[in-house]
Amino acid sequence: MNEPQPLPQREIDASDSDDMPTVPIPARKVVTTFDAASRHERIEIKPPLIRFCRRAITYGFGIWLRFSTALVRRLNWYPRVEPYVGYGTEHYSRLICRTVFGPFKRQSGRLTRGIRGMLTIPSPHTKVRIAIDDVPLETVQVGISEVYDHVDRSRDISSEFAASDSAGYLDLVAEHSLEPGIHNVSYRVRSRKPVAANLFTIPSGTKVGVISDVDDTIMVTQAPSLMKAAYNLLLLDPKKKVPVPGMNLLFNRIADMFPDAPFFYLSTSPWNVESSIRHFITYHGFPEGPLLLRDLDPRPKTFIPSGVQHKLEYAEQLMADFPDMKFILIGDDGQKDPTTYATIAKRYPGRVLAVGIRQLSPRESAGSLGTMAGLAATQPVPVTDVPVFTGTTGSNLMKTMMPYLKQQLDK
Image (cartoon, rainbow, N blue to C red; front, side, top):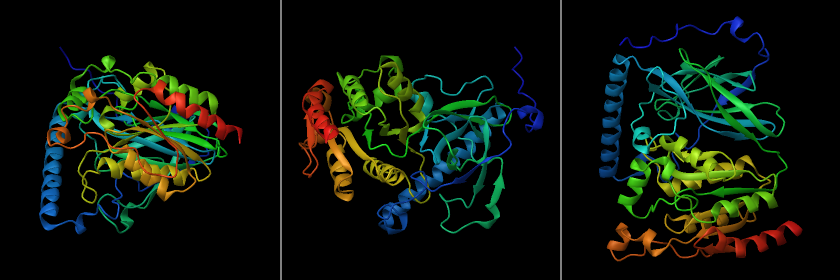
């Protein structure tokens, strides 16, 4: 059987986009948690043995990346885009996507088991053409920030394309004027049809937002148990993933109480399983919103960010992006969410409206390394000036949290 032939490789000329407005949207590449090492995580301040191990792993990953890239090219795989949901205000948007290799007929965003997503081969330094509601982006990129601290002047370009980084990720800030609501962002690489993702444009005057964990907060994964969590993440049929009882009801009650409130799903799960989590959120009736996941590829400066570091840095990013917004933080007691959220509340006094902690059952926390070592698998309720509500299900949390939130709404 003859293999399908790729589309002719060519640039899109004016005839491809006669109906597209000619005034481009300016965009710039930004330094975010993909490539920005926090002060405590920079490799140069680590002990010599840790520095050596991290550099060895990063070097080994680079060898695997070069080998796998050569292999898939011999198999006639081509770059494609995995688009992720973006967010922003009327004046700017944060857009995230990843370029990866795939067979000619492979579609982006397919619902697959986690193990297939984890074996994704990134397509580094791939040019991507981006448009918001059919208006093209004009990008300016400076430096390779995950490798160098200094500016690489040879990469100062103004172009209709944006280039992904060494792991295939592309993170841009676009400056524009958009109406609040859901917009369409299209991504296109050569030899592929455009793919699209939603862009949530949040009114700048929105007063309340929600930041929620995913694992064991809205979706049962038994994260404290390494073996069970690995099975649920990598091998379990995505259609069989189970929601935490009552959490979708709680989230929708919050959405009804605060109609403009955006929902940000902040998880330590890798971007490789984004489509699985996205389908889960939609299928089980949770409010739609951006997913903010973790890059597990070891980087020269950051290595692999810890779960706590990842959540703190993205929460700080959201606090900076929406300076007038107060947040409801929802998590569980199995992955250091209580102390993480207490830290956020301490760093940003007056910015956290309430904290909801879903308490894991003994069965969910059984089998963890901490339990076997005689340590508690879950964390106690954090000590903070912000009201903290706890419960084993969404219904339990709703009984105590919703009356408090209603009081805040009536003020």
